[in-house]
Structure formats: C-alpha cells, structure tokens
Length: 550
Image 1 (tube, rainbow, N blue to C red):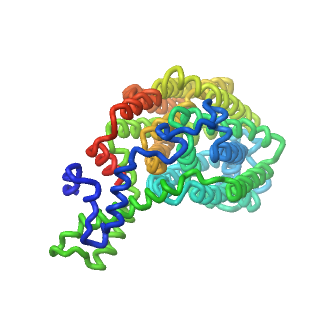
Image 2 (tube, helix red, strand yellow; image 1 turned 120 degrees about the vertical axis):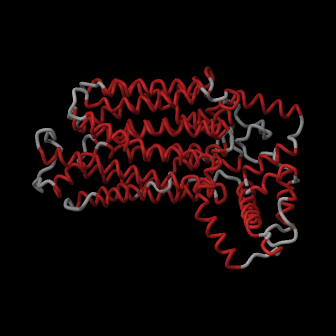
Image 3 (cartoon, helix red, strand yellow; image 1 turned 135 degrees about the vertical axis):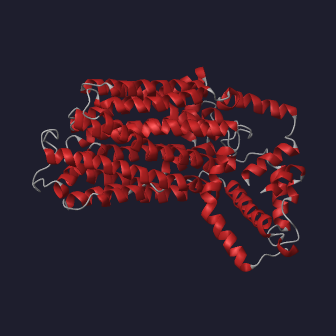
C-alpha cells in the first residue's frame, strides 16, 4: 500500500495504533523491544552472539556436540537409504504395471528381464510411465511452489521439530503405495503417483536446512549443509547394495521399514532447534503485521476505528488465501535475493530434468538393468560423499561460496553434454562422476541465503527459494520431455540433455554476477565487524529491516 511509503519517517512504536484493537499498547511495546534488541542474537548459531569459551573452535567438534545437526544427519541417511533403494525399482515396476493394464502384457510376466526395445507392450508401458512421472513431478512441484514459503514461515513460529515430524509421517505414503501396487498388480499406477505427490507436500529437507541454520555459525553453514547432503549421498551409495540381492517387492518393503524407522526416530529423539524467544518474536510480529494490514485497508472507512465484522472476516480470508504469495515476496527484497531466485530457477530446471528422465532414458536407449542402476548410484553416492563431506569445506575456504557455485554449475553443464552424446553405459557412468562436482551447488546456495537472512526468517527464506526451485522442477522435466520427443529416433536421441546444459549456463552467469560481499561468508563477517566497530545500526536501517519482516 502507498501508505507504507511514509514508514521510514516513523518510529517503530508508531506502526501500531493505540486507539484501536489491532495495535494495542502491548504490540507497541513489543515492537519497541524488537527495535532496541534487533542486533542481539539469541541463537547459538549467530556470529554476533557471544560464544561460550567452552564451545569447540573447529567445525567437526562443534558439529558433533551441537543439538540437532547430528540427528538430522542420521535422518538424512535413513531417508536416502529408503529413497535410493527404490529409485531403480520404480521405473521398472511402473513400466510393467502400465504394460499389464493398458498394453495387454500377460499378468504372469514382467518387463524386468525383457529388453523393452524388443517387446512392444513393455516399450509402450515405459513411454507411458515416463509421461506419468513427468506429470506427477509437475503437479508435486507446483504444489510445493505455492506452499513451501508458507510452510517455512510457519516453522519460524511453531518450531522445526513439529513440522519435520509431520513431513516424515507424510513421506511414508510413497513406499506404502509402492508395496500395495505390487500386491495388487492390476491397480492403476495413478494411485502411486498420487501418494508420491502427497508425500512431497512438506519437504523435510527444507525445514532441516532452517533447523541447522538455527544452531550453526555463518562461516560453517555451507560445510554443515555439505555434510548433510554427504550423508544423503552415503545413503544413495549404500542403498543399491541392499537392493541387489532382493526382489522388487522386498526392496519396497525395506524402503517402508526404513521410512518408518526414520519417523519413529524423529518422534522420540529429534530436538527442537528454534528458541522459544525467536518463535515468540516471530509470532508477535505476525500478529502486529496482520493487524496493521487490516487497518491500512479498512481503518479509514467512515473515519471509524473498528471495521465491520463481515469486512473483517473477508479481509482475513483474503489474506489467508494470498499469504503464500506474500511470503515469497521476500525474494524481491533486493537485487541479491532476486539474483539468487533466478539462479535457483535455472539450475533447478536442469537438475530436476536429469533426476526425472535419466533412468527412463537409459533403460529405454541403453538397456540399463538393476545392476547398472546400482553401479550408477554407487558412483554418485561415493563421489557425493567425497565432494560434499570433505571437499566442500576446503573449497569454500579457498575459493569462497561464490566461486564454488560457479565451478559447480560449470561441471553441471559439462556432464549434461556428455549425457547428450553418450553411446555406452560407460559414458553415462563417467558423466555421472563428473557431475558429482555439481552437488556442491545446493548446500552452498542454501548457506548463502541463510547467511543473508535474519534469525527469525530462516524458515521463510529457505521456503521461498525452495518454492522457486519447485517451480523449476515442475517446468524442467516437462521441457526436457518435450525436447526428448523431438530427438528420440534421431542419431543422438540424448541430445535433449543439451537443453539442461543451456539452463546450467544461464545459472553460471547468474552465479558470476553475485556480489562477493554478500555471497561469501568471510566478507559478511568482515562487514559485521565493521558495523560493530562503527556503532549501532541507525533507526532508518532498522526500519527497513522491520518493514521487510512485516
């Protein structure tokens, strides 16, 4: 609203009105307290907070002794084991399922041991499964686009633990549907994809990044995020080993058991990382913001302080419906956040296209079987552990976060070029190994956005950028699928991966344009030291920060 243009000239306490029900004295006092204490950080993870001399001064001891990150690391490994064990199973099961119900494959046969290029029913089933997986990915990520920022903001108020437990519970639907689908082979696979979409409504990984940001100092966040995703890579590396000696149905049951174990562990052992002071501060800020918004819209009607009950209900309903979009407006805060959003969008389009289509493509064009998929994920997992768990910390120290992202995206573009012209299974394995360097990008970007957000907007910031990534993941597979329809049947059917190379190239240019002073944690730390030496933050600067939060 235009009336907000005058806010920088006002004191914080004057935001709320003492003559109406929406801005009472308590809210005024609260905002005044926030103004006075804005520079005070209550969380252990803030660099400005006075560090306890008993705390470890190096990263690994700090990580081990922290409350939250070690537990989240274990959950990441369990989640990866559960997901990774079925990644190679799902395309095969879905292909057989569609061949049974739509293409007249004998109910006693499967496509597992048959070359799909030789059996028309399995080939048609594979194509239908690929299309359905693309549509499912689109729907799932569009839902995440509208809800991720809102969920992150809610976690800023109610805490991380509660949201992560709900997310873990919903993730049980995916392996459960896979088990039931194989028990009843004539069931339409659409039910499985519906369960997949539902299980992705809440992303526990996004919430876990916010939880880690609550307790880890800025300079170690990218390294900690790297260890988290290194644990995920470890699970991916081990899961094929568990899956090889088992049948598809047994692997699906194993996945369900692992997911259930992760849910129970979260229920009994996962600690809360968000302090009560921070969550209460965010909750009160939300109440004041809603009250002020209602006053701006309806407060001047007929010169009356109170608005009509009907209009009040309509206003509240409207704000609830449009809240997900308001939460994402944090990405429009400044040039740096806008650049991060564009970067996340184009890189997300590439990674999602690879994740969704690679296995279907290799099974159809290069005759990949379960053992080949196992080898692929062992390569990705082991190199992912090396890159994220060990290499990322050193790379961040030597190069800084900005250059790490640029290097990661360059290798992402390069490995998609190899996918495009791969003629053998070995080419795919080599490309996957080279592409493991790209795994440094996501934890580093997550750390960059966490370092540039305040302590009580970590969830909102992570959620907003995850929403952009989800939009990219919705569009990316569809775009690459359309490109594959054009290249399939040509001399180089994999040349559609060059579209992903183009997306990575755009993301690389965006990464190169990131301001070093905001992207690198070392520069941020120097700026904070200068701010401390220079005195307290001005009232106008505080006001700008508070306007962004509200």
